[in-house]
Image (cartoon, rainbow, N blue to C red; front, side, top):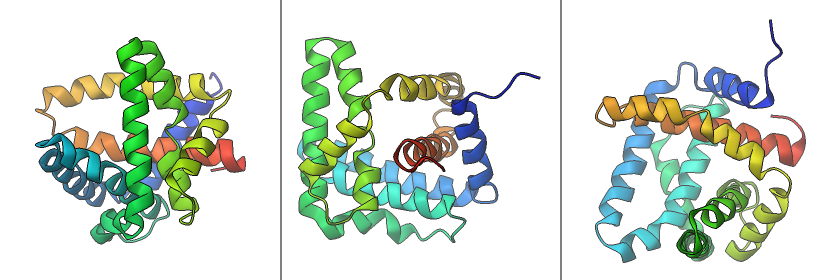
Length: 192
């Protein structure tokens, strides 16, 4: 049997970490997605809560993968450091949009480079939004292609989720975030 790739190991570990927690993960994802959808009704609303909610959702996934009981209030924890999470979310969105307007590829590269920002903010709650973005960019040097390949592994699942009228995304989203968390921990600490 062929040896598993690192990306396969991230995904296998994510499934193990979420085992027995899938319903809690789906409910948390529903709360996160519903809030993002409501905020997205106005562009300003989306810009205001993307950072804080993303940090909170990262905290929620970290708790779930740490085999802790799901506390849905964790999703709102990013609002405790509203100023810095707002700055991180705003700048990340602006940079990715500018990159995407230039051509799609620069937007993808920028998105991959800044993708660890919210996990970094959870690891270091005192960090500024700008420093978290910079740290993510530095951390992802030489790792963007690896993360891109990891995310591509979920493409087939995402297409299947569309066939379920989007319901499948309630399970796919936490699975993807958990795999990305394992990726982050491995490139940052050397283990996950």
